[in-house]
View 1 (tube, rainbow, N blue to C red):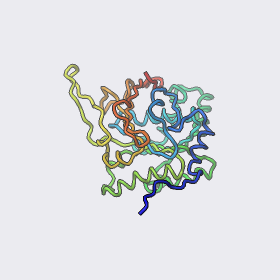
View 2 (cartoon, rainbow, N blue to C red):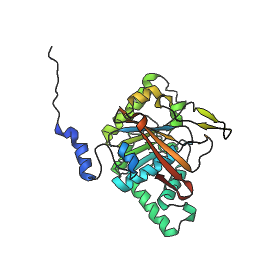
View 3 (cartoon, rainbow, N blue to C red):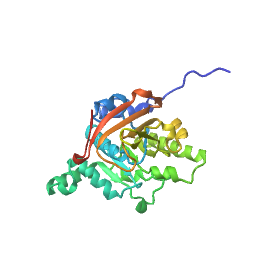
View 4 (cartoon, helix red, strand yellow):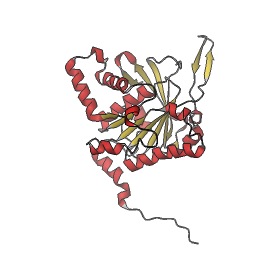
Length: 287
């Protein structure tokens, strides 16, 4: 039997990459740019792939993703669909995005600047409301076609429903595998980037004798819900972590983004980017 070392490839197989470079010449094939230079040097979201963003509750996963999404809108011209039913109403997420755009709370904004911020949001974001849309993990990606028909073609999807992965009755390994494969397949078929939020199932604490308090510690990807299976299948994996952070106390301060996997390659210990979250001014900055 002759072993096949080569295969024929149609040039159209690279159309998405070529089109992306043509539309966004300032980005690199590894992914879009956020404007956070340290993060961009290590990782960038790329259409056709998925990224798992995991961490313990209240570590800042949602906040980080909303800031990242707005940066990708500003820098790469991306459009986003958000499905975030875990903790917040859609109104809560809209208000949070508006506050980030404005740099202050919605209550503190003037009428005209609020209208401009809302217009910017309307041009670049759409939201699923689960109860009204009848969306579940099996059909959410099919609903994206309806947005394109209405003239809104997304580049990325944020799926922030980590509790579903912990409480799902689909605990059989094959079903969980199918779920992650669905995210990857949908990203490739729809030419979008999927951000999937997941939780640490059993957060680990250490006791600080100097402060007499317990704090959370970073966790490897295998510690997230269905971790070993998803760690193997995920193309990109990022942990969001707040040092000295309490699981019950979300506030401003230092925030780490630990990058574990990029384009199916393990990054190792070098993949950490440190940020400072300024909650009063709704900003996240590298330092």
